[in-house]
Image: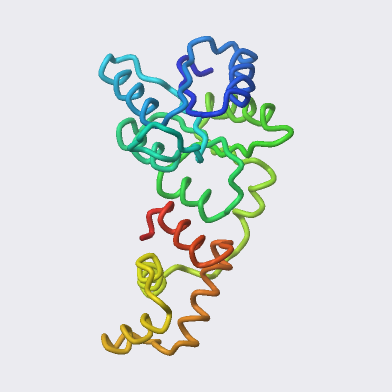
Length: 222
């Protein structure tokens, strides 16, 4: 079982549940932080002191407050921590249900587990810790695993990224069309651009173009 654990979670009520799960597994050496910046600094210091953590449990979304932060969400924390300590076991613990975001965590940051917060999440968290402490297998909450396994043939390409970059700059669709025509980027008809934006919103489950841009930025696509 894990010997030294750090938890990045900004809600006290959820932290209490995680702490109970750790105690149930006889894990007594743990710390929790409410800010990703603090978690990252603690992990770096532990490495320098030659007393590294062997498990990080992190939420993905952190509510902004009066404090200015450099690492604003769990996705970026996990990315930075993975670069610092490649062998650290990482569990993302979140209400996130967007398959593309979860898949990105497994593919790009090589997380070891994803537990979805819910009615049975504490029991799931304990199952994940038991599994990850004794094997190199991955743990995924049952309610999201089927979504991740769905066959989705749509792939994001350079054309999609270019459109989203223009949207992020506040460029109107007519102006995107004119830019594409001037640069001989095809397809460049207004209807083709509208259809591609619609596909992107469906793929990312975005409510509107602003939401689409926000998701793309969170994932580091633009």
